[in-house]
Amino acid sequence: MKKGILFFIVLPLFLICAFPVTAVEMDKREWQDETIYSIMIDRFNNGDNTNDFEVNTKDPSAYHGGDFEGIIKQLDNLKDMGFTAINLSPIFDNESAGYHGYWVNDFYETEEHFGSIETFKELVKEAHEREMKVILDMEINYVGANHSWLTDPEKANWFHPVEEPSKESWLGNRPMLNFDNAEVREYFLDVATYWIEETKIDGYRFYDVQQIPADFWSQLTATIKEGNEDIYLLGEVSSGDIKSIAKYKQAGIDGFTDYFSNEDLRAAYAQPDQSMESVLTKLEQRENIYANPNLVGTFFDNHKTVRFTTDAAKLNEHPGPRWKLGLTYLYTTPGIPMVYYGSEIALYGEAAPENYQQMNFMTDKELIEYITQLGEIRGKTPSLTRGSMEVLFEENGMLIYKREYEGETSVIAINNTSGTRSVEISAADLQDERELRGMLAGDLIRSVDGNYKIVLDREEAEIYILAEKTGINIAYLIAISAVILLFILFIVLLKRRSKENPV
Picture 1 (cartoon, rainbow, N blue to C red):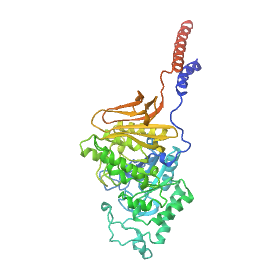
Picture 2: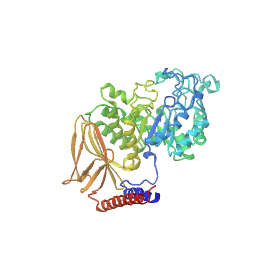
Picture 3: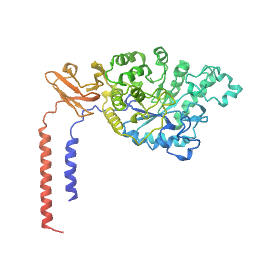
Picture 4: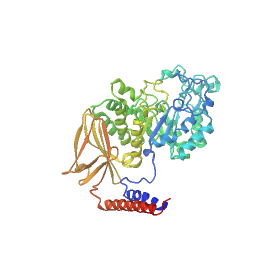
């Protein structure tokens, strides 16, 4: 009897799953297919209370208790949201109150507030078991102001003159290392290879690469890639200066965080009815600026910027729709999306250190659900991560573009305007006698008289797949009808048997 019931449950599911999947299958996940979640370790999640000394969650300049164990406990949630990699703030042993990781004491030890190197290895292992990658922030430009090297006469030439001020004043006047010194170079070549070999991390993000000679980066990247060519190396030129980026793009660094486009991108989505012209112009210019534009780290905010939520709030805009539209663009255009922790709850914050607010896991889930949906679509649609890009329509915030990869065509429509918009796209730009199937809201658009009419409400977006017209699937309807009839017959027979054999 139980087997009979199981048959009628499984059969409809089998029939539904038997229909072909429209997305192209990817043979191997490349770095451009990743979606990265960036974490300020101390402000994320406290998973181990045994390392909570000198912790004060009410003091923004003190440790708050976030640690490696706390990240391990959130890995399933991050994977469920569609993130395939995590990027961690510096993990190295820091001076007192160095919760941010920028006052390094020892590049070979983990910060005790975060946990031991064994716990960090467990974090990497747990991430890998979930098919998630781990990228480590590596700021080798500076050390803490009280580092022992500063009083070591044999290391007097390891630093630039101490009067040289730090660009990040809130961090203090940190001593800048001198990479014209061969000993300094050798030291950090060893450091970089040590953490890869010892902990099996998958990549590094290097801060302010323009402060260090390009030939050192060539040395470093060659050394790292010799041991593991799949390691991802991400550089930051936070000024977004084209000349600086051009100088370093041949140094073997795989990608750069896209400060070049960031200001225009934030302005375009902080409020409705904004032209996308400057954003799209810079998207085209990226082809010439970066060695591989698909490996660029795209973002709205990070550890060095004001929170994007703050931009929207200052314009009296609700942050939810701003984030939804902005992330739709970020997830569907060339580059690797980097989402700063707390963006999924629209965390507020001015420039550092005010943008290092405590993460709150007890909050509204609407934006989290939207990000989860975006992550799922991006993960199964190769044209969004590997495809060519062509803009089909742009006008004051209404944007439609297509991406194509190995026969798969996706069409993205974003209505960042204050009213409903209707746009007709010619079949000459797509294909006639087909249909656009929406993956966000389930919208369905068929070509009529050689045109696709896309209608979107204000502050709405849709990601479509171009597919054959489905029409009415007679065979499918017959199969489902047969299953229903068999199920009804089964229930009738079950009732009869129960009457014949009463308990």
